[in-house]
Image (cartoon, rainbow, N blue to C red):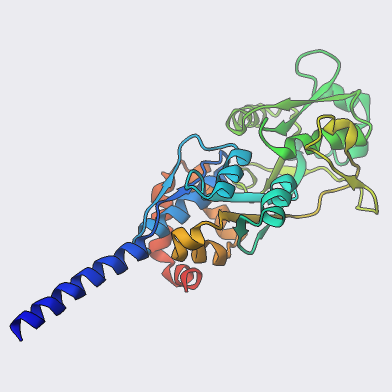
Length: 318
């Protein structure tokens, strides 16, 4: 009997070890997108996986190109597993190729985000709408380099929204008066702070949720209402600027957490988590405020939020 008990105990230990290994699953590789909201979501996902789930997730430094992340998710080899902040329809090409096409990428229920062109509110009496941007005297106020055209920040070089705004300015007939500045988000934020401190003109794209809305008093530019045919975008073509047209306001974006469906086999509990996350824009904005404006460590913000919101985390897990 003693021998049988030893065998049974050994089997139980082996079974327990196997179950733990299965629960832990494969290491999850999270993309390192550059904007604050994407970073915040990535660290929260990592905190949940490494904390209450008892698995392992890494944020791969430098993995910041959305197309590369999407291709890695499609491969399913663990080179890229999570796209933390997939804005639609900005990344329609990724969606068509991997979500609807190859069906290798899954997603959660999205939260809504807005994207508009802004000026500081001290400029709002002069610049209220696209019609105002058509006035040469207004464009001249924003001409920083003396070449006769006003500058506006369209976004980072790697963003599809950057192309979208160039299409919009062309479609509104503004190309002769305005030119796009294409700069990293961090560089632009420095310019924005300097301009507002000196009450200088500055015209720029921004979105919600983001902390600049809490830090500065800014006003959106009115655009024409949407009508049939006002938006026809083909931003992946070589001649994307000529092939696209967009002469109306944008619809609210749908923003997803996307993930490699290979996780359904490699780490099923994490795949379940990522498919069930339901992000609240107000909560995302709070993370952005703490990380972007208040300069808190994103890992600390994420871990503290997970610790204090286990009811929400358990809903996502179960």
